[in-house]
Length: 345
Image (cartoon, rainbow, N blue to C red):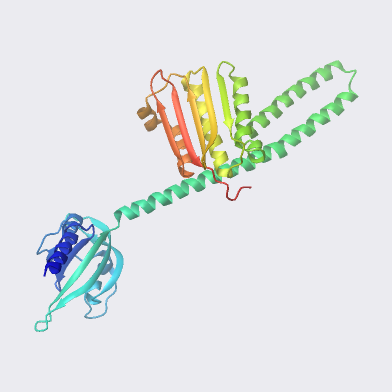
């Protein structure tokens, strides 16, 4: 007797607190009993009729067949559909049913209807697909950068070098023509400037060293090039990391440092920047700190695309991105990503 009471007590608690909506309805779809979750999901009340879902409203029926697919088939494991709620909107639900009781005299039946809200799962799936699309777009963008950088370096760069050699040959034949020599020297200087620009553009698109040497040497080259252009800023690189990572990790970490340095130079008015790259357990850890003017983090997060893109890149790698800043207290960026090595090429 006590076991039976305990069993009933547990069943009542399950009925009250389970997240799935549980409804007992008759063959006319009149609600005889419902739990709080069903009430919360639908807004229906005892005595209301359960409306037909979008599947039942639109499906083709045989003559004499009940509109409700669940009642017609008595027992259905589950299927997905849209169910109208009390305020007119429709929610995505997973529905299942089972025949609970049949009166032998009147042939009236009672059905168990279980509703499971699919809204959260659908939103999670949409978020997953959105992240996947962003990831593929970033990968496609980097591949295009790699192709263009290679074309500039091996194609356009080599062609310009050939022209430079040709100018040298021409110069040897016109040694006595001072006016022409002066003109050729001007052309040579202009050509050299164009070749330097091409080299710079190629590097900005995709540094060759990142594929050949890895992240640490490439960051060293980046810091050196920025330091030359902006000698008033002291940039310290501490790269205690010599291993190779997955190409996606290397290029995305590089892009974050590149974007961070760009922001520091453009907005921070900093005199010192520290960049530290190290291995922590199985992760790659990056830390960037400047002593600049800082900023209102909430305002910049709403307005600035640069920070969003940086965070997006790290999030897609399965890592964490943290940034702290305040007026006149500088900015600190902390990043931790899994040190992938699979499919390294």
